[in-house]
Structure formats: structure tokens, C-alpha cells
Image (tube, rainbow, N blue to C red):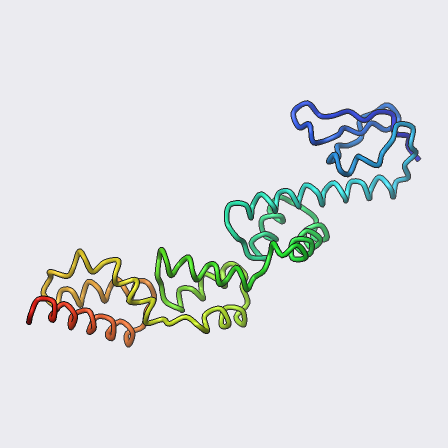
Length: 210
């Protein structure tokens, strides 16, 4: 057993408390984890280990909260980030479970968010979206469900709309080549590309009175 002989607030990080056992600095704790300690309290090795585990959980949780403050994240992204910071697997799992309980992590909601953002700012094919979401650890079933109500041809039209202004005055064959390459680089298949370009050329022809 060891006796708590001092509890002092860290100067550089006032939300953390330095714990001294038997007159010697032992470890730092988050304020919430140190709140139950009192000067003179005796701690067993098991109690010390549990305090350290709780502190690791609090630090990992705050790190995860900071990560999702920038943008929504998938479960795998948060877990990967915490592992890279060398948190124990048990702590990582506990943080993930807590965040899911608070509805701060939801892979289905994340997939819908990601698809919506791409559709708005960088339209791309289902194939490209699948690759991106799988890289973020989203399961195939969730991806399929998230894409179920998305019209890929409409997405291709949105992608084309971002480039048509610069190419609309080109001859049809040149426009077809440039737009085809552009849409192909975004992963769209030949059938959708042809349908979109045919419609663009037809609309331009009507606008120009041809």
C-alpha cells in the first residue's frame, strides 16, 4: 500500500493533477479522475492501476472528441487515431463504446454525410465512393444501404455541370473527349458517361439553334 502525500495542479496543464505517493511524484491524473483522492489515503497496487486506466480513458476520450470536432468520423478512423497515439486496445474499445452510446459515432450516419458532401462539392461515381468509404472502415452493407437512394446518373450530371462552362463552345467531338475523360477520372462507367454527354450535346445544340 502507498499513501497519497500531495495533490498538486500542473502549471502547464491546470486540468491535470500531479499525484505524490509516499512523498514521491507517482503519476499525473485528469482532474475528474483525481477528484476522489484525499491526502493520507492509502492506495493498493490494484487501485493505482485502476486510476491510471481511468486517466488513460479520459485522455483518449478527449482526444477522440477533439478529432470529431473537425468533421464527422467513422468508427475505424477514431480507433485508428487512438491506436496511433499508443492507447491500449481495451481503452480504445471503451472510448468507441462510450461515443456510440452518446451517438457521436455512427458509421451509417457517417456514410450518408460523406456521400452528401461528395455529391455537393466533388461529385464522383459509386465505385469511387465505395473505395473511399471502405478505406475509412465502413462495411459493404452500410455502403450499399447509404447509396441505395442515390441516382448515380444525376451525380454524373452534377459533376459535368462543374466543367461544362469551360468546354461548351468546343466542337462536339472535342467536348465529348474532354468531358468523357473528366467523368472517367471520377470513376463513372461508360454507359453513364455516354448518356450524360449525349444529353449535354443535345441541350447545347438546342440552345445554339442547331
